[in-house]
Image 1 (tube, rainbow over the protein chains, first blue to last red):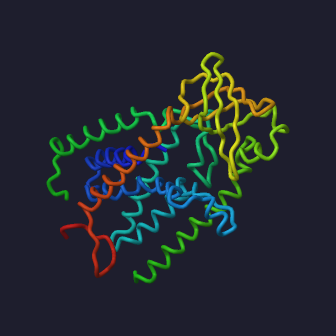
Image 2 (tube, chains in turn brown, cyan):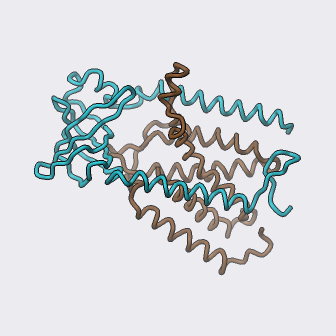
Length: 165
Length: 159
């Protein structure tokens, strides 16, 4: 997947820009959306506990991959929502929005056969991909950085945020 | 909502995530249109002539005849595969995806390739940048939210 920093920056840029039009979407909620954007990256838990270890220890088939899919985002956003005590519906909406942005971004990555990974699991296995980029390409991060900084500057100096938090 | 209820529902949701992990592993082969790396490790020759999409770490590259040797990892081990018609530039230590037709003797005639990591250092780059991302999201989040000890949940800062 695109790196976690790109995911978080893309969510920041898009949600902050959306906040200029949508009154209740304040910085506090942009922060929740950015957290949601990190959900698919929890698939990297495999670096801590290899799925092979789980398979052998429990003697069951197992893969982490669903964490980095739509199913994972919908479920894990639910778990994180329970860490909040107020306005859970809005928390969940923002988490899922952020997570979906990351999944869509990852769905555009290059695959040699033109079909993406299982990001829409369990609804659609391997949808087509336009193969726009690979994560290791530094231009991916460079462009998201430029956009995020531009958005931050506009948000700070050009947008009237009086009354927002 | 009572804390015990929240913990229970959260555990339930996590159990469904774990269940999805099991379902995924069982269902994946039926949704993968090519022989898998495990299939090829078990019996290679029956798959000759079929298309396949494989991921591997580059061992060596021979630019004179556009070939490379990659190591493909599977569930229980790894095997080496010769890639012909390589149309991309990659260094040993890098990672590529190869889509092509399987040839005899662990060889694949590439129809298209994607360089996932041009060199071994790309993985370090991705992890370093991702660690920065984790830090950024934590800092940004906790500037807006804090943990309320009474209700054991996040509440907006400054309220």
